[in-house]
Amino acid sequence: MAGGVKWIIANWKSNKTISEALAWIDFVGPKLSKRENLKVVVCPPFTDIEEVKKAVLVGNYPILVGAQDLSPFDDGPYTGEESARILSELVDLVILGHSERRQNFGETDQAVAEKVVQAKQFNINPLVCVQTENPPLPEGVKLVAYEPVFAVGTGNPDTPDNAGSVASAIKGKYTGDITVLYGGSVTQENAKAFLQQENLSGLLVGKASLDPGEFVKIVEIAYG
Image (cartoon, rainbow, N blue to C red; front, side, top):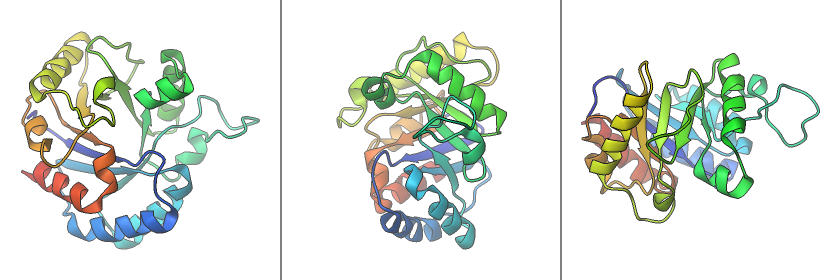
């Protein structure tokens, strides 16, 4: 796989109470070792973020905490939204433009671009999800997850070779140092094949990340 930093990101989606989240951290945290070339991130629901952050800090675990979304607006009269400024005290990364957000909530490329602006203003790293090899990436985005719609939550992943080809095409379209991850029905059985692709630099793990044991095995594969 590509040199440089690798990313293994857990996207819990709308799952786990606070107690379930803390049990996950208690299991996973002690089993991870700090590696300079590997970033492990967990993205819980908003309700869990603060307690997860505390648990990571207390345990001194090599885990970054992320959010699954943020508001395209500043602080203010935006009921139900979480602004980047508020989240910036707790998270280092945010997932933006996930196919489930686009499909279920009508999120557009313009909305994603507005959220990227907010994230970058408050030093939150935006991970932008794309579904094709020719996506309109917002300016300044360096971290991308290729997640084909047919593979998300279906148990039917893309092939590693095709995912690697898409990653190569994305890098070829944009100047600068673009890091591309793969997401879509990632498991411990297929993680190694994706990680071996030259143009892929990690994984966005959905359903499999809910099982702490399976997630640890995926991280161990990334250790190499």
